[in-house]
Image: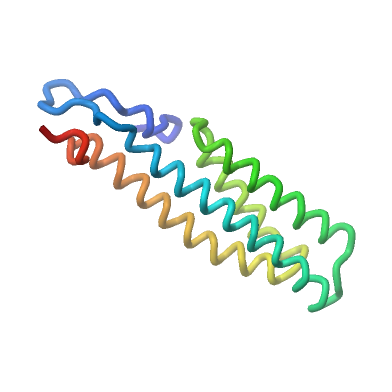
Length: 142
């Protein structure tokens, strides 16, 4: 499967297989986990505001604006998880979090922590895709 293909579009069974598509959408739960992770991350990012204000050089318009815009982009992204480009959007937000080292080191550290969470979510996405292709999901069994 090429990287440009969305694994969520692989609901048709491979030729010659004895199993069909699952009765329920297996990606619905995964999209919910991604949306919940983004909301949690947005809350944590907003909680970085008082830390950035008291530790280090304080809070400037640039650092405060960056943190607020990043949190708003995460909340917006939580509602976009049904789009085929949602995981790319999530990973771009993670890159922006890690780039937050330039704004405040605490934001960059949070970015590294959540990068581990998103790495695990990518692993889960690949596992769901593999199980869907092999017909191992509970909704695909007779």
